[in-house]
Image (cartoon, rainbow over all chains, first blue to last red; front, side, top):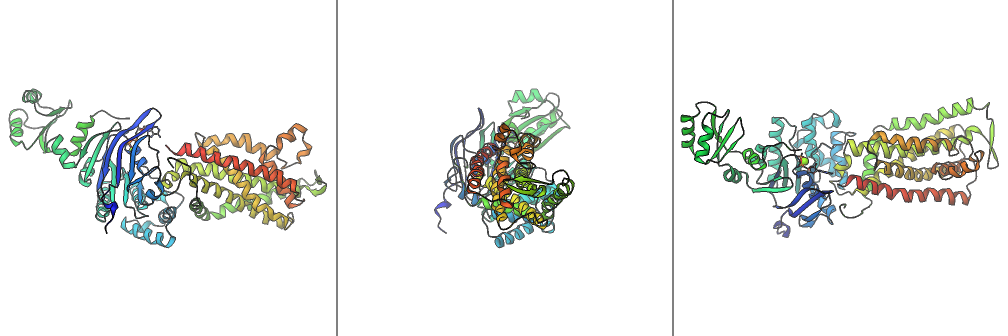
Length: 309
Length: 263
Ligand SMILES: Nc1ncnc2c1ncn2[C@@H]1O[C@H](COP(=O)(O)OP(=O)(O)OP(=O)(O)O)[C@@H](O)[C@H]1O
Ligand SMILES: [Mg+2]
């Protein structure tokens, strides 16, 4: 289908800003999310991820900049935009006064979906998320993992073109997380555009086509996970813990790209097996490993290591 | 708005429908109170009080004390139902369940959500009044068809007290703070709005104060509908008062909730 919307970004933010009083939570950030893309927003606690998302679905008024979703202005066209997107909030704001199935069906009526259609979709979603056997359960009886899945299922009741997920896997066990990743992959295959925030770097590395890392309301980097790892930490990391004697001096003398964490020393390198052999030969017999660089290395290197909030 | 501007459409009925659905699941509990309450009061005041106050004069009519009190019972129940629904229940949905946050990701505005909730509060008042009307009819305390006017009155009263409640919900810090308007507003109204004794037995200044209370007008209207004659003065003054107060408090409630919910 020749659709003029195909070419415009699903989300386009330009110098987007959000202030709470005099505090600037989102500080002039710009990014685009393309159709069918899985886009990640990463950042430490309080970085401004949720604030950004709240503006995208027309919940928070912008304090500055411009923001369009599906090419429409969020401030004026919020109603038609919301009809086409699904939001999975950071906290499980399910309706505890209703059953699992009712949570889906009633949410459908908020979108104006006719009851028989909502019923059919609820059945499909319960199946898709492995909730069918609990459809009559009260929300309060569900485990954290099932609740999370229900929140996600609910976000899909209107068959959204854009799915916004604010930390969808926080609090899930590894099995549930893996399963959720699979489900996201299936949705992506169907052409759903997905915007995701997460604190799990492995998750972001696996899922995201592209991502931004933000801190204190500003974008630090933008790119594909693999490219970012290559660019900022090299694909390999030599890690020594506890730090071997003489290694610090060696690293300084050689001017190697490294980070000293006191009890741990990280040396970022690009396919340098020789360096690793040299270090293990001269300084560290044990306590030293060569591993792949990860997105977590990038994240910590860029956002620093002190605690937030 | 949501962000920019006020937006209120018929979509508010979707929220009303949600509340209706949830309530239907526990209808027996919601019906128990309006069912039993009038029976208890009639037993206490009809039997227990009969020796003390055999009958009294109200607007030139001689009525028994239970008859005098019955419409006031309906009126206070109209007040409490809507007020409690749009304070405690709405607060739980807003603050603890974050139901409103969830709904605000759908094509509904804050105004529509809150209006749906207030309409639901008024519906609860209407349902309670209906049940009580039926029960009191069984005791022969209700005169038809005039008393049917209590049904639209219940809805209007519900809108009024629901809006007042919702305005408080928009500003209280925590759920315990509702004790304040209940102690300072609702309880005095319950006692002094001509509910248990005619207002004209009060000193002049107290009468003047009583007539500023919305429940006084609700009681007065309910009373003339059950055994008096509804005059155009009643309709104009008391009806007008309730309408005007609703017209003021409803937008106040919307504004308070907007301020609270939109961040
Ligand atoms: N309603 C609000 N009023 C005042 N400050 C707020 C409000 N909401 C968020 N903030 C502040 O704005 C900053 C960004 O918050 P935000 O929730 O966007 O962070 P986040 O990146 O989602 O963090 P987390 O990973 O912890 O969820 C924080 O410092 C937070 O305290
Ligand atoms: Mg957040």
